[in-house]
Length: 419
Image (cartoon, helix red, strand yellow):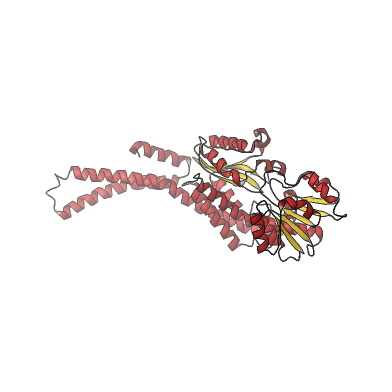
């Protein structure tokens, strides 16, 4: 059996494909149920963010598990396999664990060191736990990944300065406009990413922050906490005619602002440019809007390019983070190896103890003439013989755990002793 990760991320596929493959939060329970029902998948966690769609699974058979996951991604996204199969990355066992640790550390993000991914990893794990799709293998793996992410951010400066996609989006807007002071900004989306956008703006000298969201109560709540103003989502055209910047990141499964919506707004702006930063995946704004005069549209591809320029400042920290990931991987492998053989070793010792005590009981009549001290000596002798006989097989089994030889030894013990 293997732990595998199969998926797509911002390094392997264009944004157009990634947004089609994204699994929104509302569909995660159904996706997890579908995975858990597959023949070769025993446990599963789905991590779907603006940078990736990845399935972490504990599989009966590696190739069968890969096929099950690929088919599940096809079913949930309705994207033909020939369009994404060649882009899939697949890692297993130690490499899968290392990848998850790197993801939790922010090493695999568009914005290196971003802190939002750690919460997303936790949320994905918690959702899988709520749906009953994780167990004794993925639970410790994800618990360890969160520990790695926290340690990295405590012991290194990887998260110094810009630490989130939201902050990077605001910094990119600031650079494009030569500063946001005195600007009016509209934030669409009051989820975690939308709030991150608003927080990154707060205190930056903007004249006004407007907040729009599908749920009015959440828009009001966020606007109140950040000294902004809540506006209705159906009033976007009116406010877009007045603001300088639109920052959007909703969980919508399709665009919420079409080319025509923005075309009708441009004429009302009296020649003033509108900067739109869309960090939603799938995108909130029709890409064709970038063709409109007076509209500058930036998306996750632009943000990745922007973040890459700033990456040089963090290069020194990457080596330190990778050292932590490597050390934690070794610790995880040692712990998981011990967990994998512990039940078998325990079962072997229980069986041996059953044989020992059974033989002593069977011969109790013939040992009746022994005094208590002599009986203790006989029982100690029997226990010592059993211990000596089990010592070498136990040591060899533990040493070989996690390898093909270890699997052969474990299977032999199960067959020989009917464990």
